[in-house]
Amino acid sequence: MWRKVKKIYKENREYHISRIAVVNVKKQPGGKSTNNAELIAAFERDNKRFLLEEISLFGRIDYIVCCGDVVADCLSRCYDGCLQFKNGLAATTNGIKVIKFVHPQTRKSTEELFFKLYDIVKKLEKDKRKVLRYNISK
Image (spheres, rainbow, N blue to C red):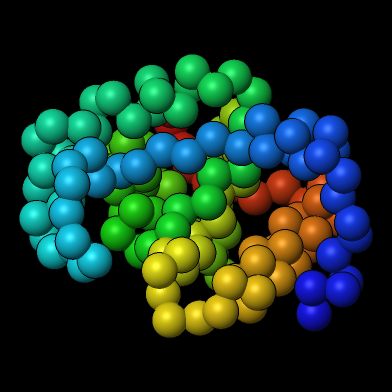
């Protein structure tokens, strides 16, 4: 499957990687698993007010990939629960496409995860005219 991915030279790779930002919703060290109820409680108490501000620091964003249902839930809470997912996709009023995806530590191969996400983004890019509309107030 990896042969399907075009060879990416260093300059091209550096350009694309520089356009990717990672934000960790869980702002505390921990083990391999997360207690979702504790994470949501800590997020509501300590971090919710900062997440949208942190995201805005990156400037223009095309996609947010929520790695895990609990991460998508936390992001939705920033939008007062109005970020509604349909088939794993949602959008904000300013056009950011939000993808609910699996956590990278799930028991799937890196190759499988890459191509699954690649296919989702490719489909969204192909049909840019399709607008995901939800009643998001922020």
